[in-house]
Image 1 (tube, rainbow, N blue to C red):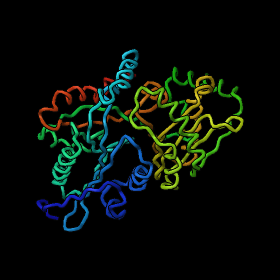
Image 2 (cartoon, rainbow, N blue to C red):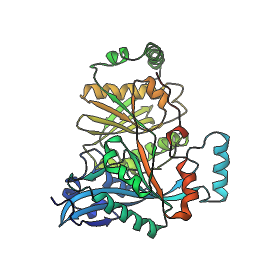
Image 3 (cartoon, rainbow, N blue to C red):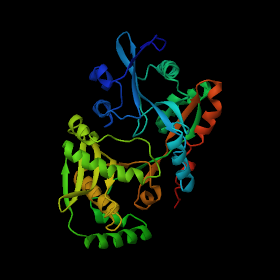
Image 4 (cartoon, rainbow, N blue to C red):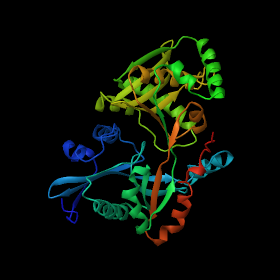
Length: 373
């Protein structure tokens, strides 16, 4: 292939505007692929506007990327009493503490770019396309969001184009090298192991909870899950995306083989769920929801984790991945942390002051500290 070939970049607002074979021929073979992005389009997440880029060399697809535009909340990393102040200010002055940002990456997972090895110039083409989209949509900054170090070789040239690199929130990963839950417990530190055993004893005294594991979610159940999801989101230190009521039903329709939902009920009432994604031997604990009138009292976080890990062991999963929060708990549960990075640049010198303010909230130290050891 000609490394100097002039590429044609096509832009779409929906993934279905590109043939599935074109996207899958270039994009990494991960669970958050074509079907996942198609589900996001159908779900209609109101705070995002999606774009899809494909680079072609004489009608042969050679690179692709997923973009989204959002009004980024500059108070995302604020906690405690100051968070109540910022929420109050935003009610009175909507948009006061937000900046419109164009991201390359995913709203809910690691950033990924599809690229054939012989076309490094595709990145320059994508940056040019992003600059034009930013102008059209009055974005204040361009950001490549949450890419792991495997993308360093591709993305480091961005530093010569005025981008700044900083560490983002890591994701938690666990290699499943054990054959039973008891064997897993033996691999924890003595303090963590005894703490977990105490919680398991309390879990045994819980009232009876019925567990359903399913790939298919009805609209009615999706609404119930959404209610629990909102409870959990409001209790989270980070609020990024907000799902729609039919999101879980849409995911199950679009990804019948990649979606796995765990539903806990008490006397017929849904009290907790885990919505997970599965591809091959990779398991992603994607979204969760709790009824907080029972969650804390009955240690549901640990009950939920135990059930999911036992499912992973029984189904020969090799990797358990979970999201970007509650790091100290996850450290005690035996997860390791994969660093992620963002590359960001303001759109024009007049946006530099607000960019500098925004950039402060991208650094991981602004969030939860992860203890070592």
